Image 1: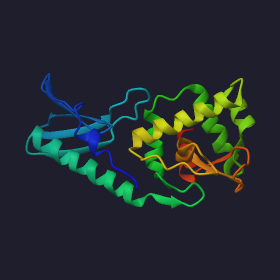
Image 2: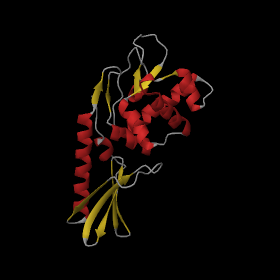
Image 3: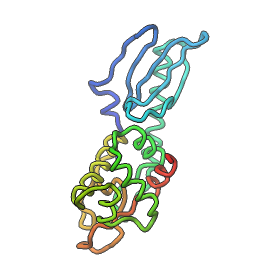
Length: 210
């Protein structure tokens, strides 16, 4: 069952401080900044991860900085809950699939290597045909298929962690749960070689980045 990022939202990493008249806080994967702008108290959410900033993510107003921050947290929590409930179930991977918006944020904010991103782009180009292990290796410039598959699995782990997605249980067709965050095995044979097809939502998110 999918889980939310409530543990991250309320965890020990959260902070509340005032810097130069700007009140700062954290909520999940977002950094919140609040202050008075043209006589109005405004709270804005930005990506907490700085690797590939997407800029302003959400904004609310309030009667004070604290009130605006509380309103913004409520908005972000509501959006998170809506995303969780709208995830579809993919029978081919036996997993819950994040929305396109969730994947897009993860692509922007997770610290993926150039090789990992190259593999994802090649997968997006392949569409429903997917990629076999040797093609994944070539797309990432790796010297072995095992190294390429491990890198791709790490991509799945990073995205699952960012999104707050519980890893699916291992199954016979695609035993590495992290790969099933990204897609599904094209062949239905239990002993078939890896032939991964990315979820449509992830492919669409990759196209939106380019």
